Length: 394
Image 1 (cartoon, rainbow, N blue to C red):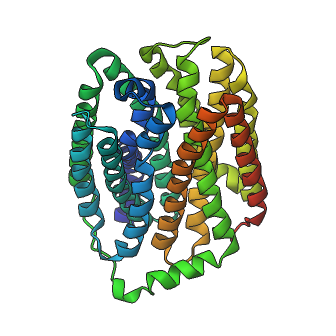
Image 2 (tube, rainbow, N blue to C red):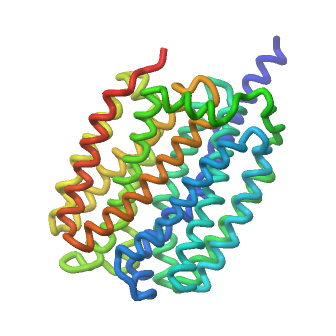
């Protein structure tokens, strides 16, 4: 009995360290996804293209992430989690370093897609690792730590890229992020425990599992919500850069990096999503998240830096909270083949980001910022309606 008690105490002591490691792995996995957005105006000038063209090129990584999310979900049962994660991060350093050579726009776009493939592979396998390695009581904390690392890379990754680009140039910026990818691979290699791959023969056909998931109305709704969440988030934080860089606000590239302190409140609010669902239920949590994000939209139209920053704080807090709630909802609702459900959700999520950058880029170029914000409002309204399809699993 004393041995069991000592083991339990050691586990409680080790858990904060494990959560910290999980958060750092998340940071180093997804930092490339968002860091390039902070230097969009600089990239647009360097390549001599329109904001929509550069916005699509930078966010093309979401296409690779969507495709890889589906592929990894199909093959996850045959892949050793730890090995797959560290190899994906090591391979991620290659396209990141090549971006530092400043290739033509088509090659830049292709390299961003390849980055997305490796980021998504590492992301999906890490989610599977957490679900399989941690107990039911600890997995919620592990997932929250991973999403919080995602929030942190949105903040500090953007700050880092803006600072590096301003001080040393775009080429050095990408070389530094390639080094971070390698650091992530080393951290996974030395900290995550080895786990044998699942016995794929014991699982049903992945396609049969997908059909079952799509026949589940709450899961279908969750996939749609994932699409809308990144549509709104990526659409907002891609094109607001151009609003902040031009008159009357006219921020410098270095100052533009500091704008991303708007993510700081989300670092503290996002881990509370699980508690909110437990306290008030799934639907009210999502509606509250979308209401917070929607409250920030009108502030984006005021030609004042303070107002725009306040709006961005609300949109970041609302969408990150919804993302954390949706991730947990899919994990709870998919009682079988969770890997397939996670793959479908992540594919939907990243396709939403790609659609946000493409559709809103056209709206921004053709009509302007006011119309872009109006489309964001319509998307949040659709998300609120879709939330009616959710129900708390019993």
